[in-house]
Image (cartoon, rainbow, N blue to C red; front, side, top):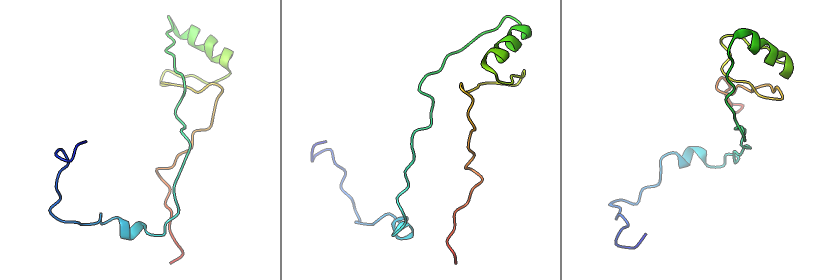
Length: 85
C-alpha cells in the first residue's frame, strides 16, 4: 500500500481492549478442522446401517456428519475463565 493510499488518522487512540488484556497469557490452539471431507450418498437406510457397522459408529436419520476414526468433540462455548478475585 502506497503512502497515498493509507488513511490518515484524526486521533492517535489505542484500542480500548488493550488495557484489559495487558499481562494476559497468550492464547494459541491448533487447527482442529478436518483436513479432508467426502460426501457419501446412500440409496436406503439399510445401506446406512451397513456403513455404520463398517465404520463402527452409530448413525441415525439425524446424523449429518461423523469423524473417522471417531473422536470426542470438545465443547468450549459453555466455559468461562476467571481469576481468583
